[in-house]
Image (tube, rainbow, N blue to C red; front, side, top):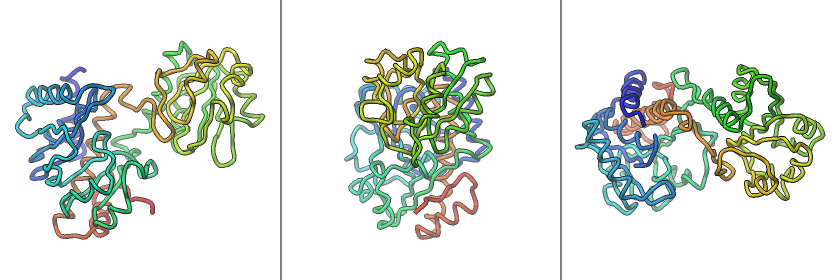
Length: 350
């Protein structure tokens, strides 16, 4: 990591988005890669305390994450406010004003939510349509009066969805697909595909869109004709949980191979069985594919800027929500007040 650039980007994002966490305590994660920056952003923005929860994972041991986080906090002169926690049972969790929904804090289930202080708030570090019930018990939040808001990733100061298009470019270049004058099929429905299409077309690719979900499928004649004549397909389905490529899916990996032996796959999101794809000899990036509802690569795969800006924005949502709650507003009133004063806030769709 280029720490000097990351620090500059964090300070810029804090200034541009007006993040001020003075007198607030934040519960977030301590993680690896660029996700290590989130507790540092909160501390740089003046948080009284930053409680950073971590655990062992395929990315590293919890003790190693704690050591790395503490070292970075010292280098950035915020070590007095960042506290790394190794257990979800830690009593300090009940002191948080703002609770993020990031990986090592999840799941925010009923048992976790009941340990929060009555005025705690939860900003989601993504848009509300990405909500997953297994990550956050929204009904329990409502019962306990805990405000929850999403973050508008398409705000002009963020433009996070534009980075999704660049993810496709990077994955395809790693597959030795030149983009210029290449034929690429973009597979998926929902919010992301138009941004992928725009980025590919700007790079000079010839793009065909194939929609999935809501009755449309890779099994259609039009979809198979497009796949048969392409250099690569980008899989970017972030809504449907239906199996797209694999045995019993909309198309099997061997069917795809027989249809087009030269096809490559760039996977951002959507259910694809990677073992089937590899068994069929289809080149695929990245090496590990996420389950449906999750992204195999997020925008931090490109660099730190999008993650820094998005997480700073999510903390800003938490800031305005927490201050509304601490003024004595109830859950609904706090959510409404935050949305009225901060365009980054996005209300949950019931």
